[in-house]
Image (cartoon, rainbow, N blue to C red; front, side, top):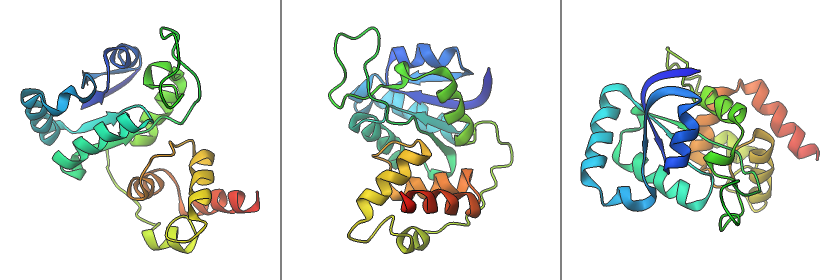
Length: 195
């Protein structure tokens, strides 16, 4: 079981139940968008994040990214780690039909994938050292952003890396610099351009 002093943010109670078997941490469910109006919960999260840090793990759909972006706008970046689950089609066992986007949420993703996502986010790192070897210009030069055919390339890259399609270029860059050497990243880019 993973352990962290960081506050872990998830969307719902079933996500929280799922994570309680994977990580020993204080886990708070946002109860969807209701957190936007819950000033007390928001203040608690902001204050806790500044003391011990925050880890955000939301679904890969539009709602998950809206909640993720909300916390990114109210908590300084240096206190946040982002863990991402890949886009996986399907429905959770407890539901009668899939979500609107047809993707599994945190509660439906395999424990091993969540564990790997948390590790990739840096949950076990103590040094917080980032390599910053890939820049936004590199993404542009490789055709991942800012060029006419960049959307297809970016989607291929995200799929190859097991990241959700809604991830922003800024978050993608952070993820790359936290998890890959320049050589590893270039190998992935080379692979997708050959396909």
